[in-house]
Length: 83
Image (cartoon, rainbow, N blue to C red; front, side):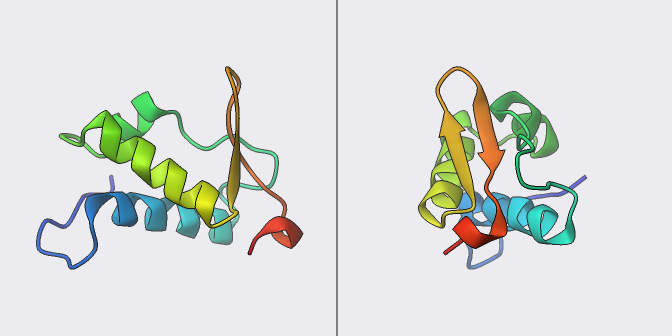
């Protein structure tokens, strides 16, 4: 189970985004697949606020790695769409 390193220079949302990014680049999360839900991410990173999870997902969207479809979830974009 991943953990937030409270001594890291990275903010918790950046650490969560990096973990998801690693899973995308590693092939665990392929294009078109949903990333874990907010609830699942909170279970993966116990003690993390939902706002932190949302900020991590927003960061991934800003990087062009994922897209969020209203009421459907957040999905990995194909590599050619990554910035």
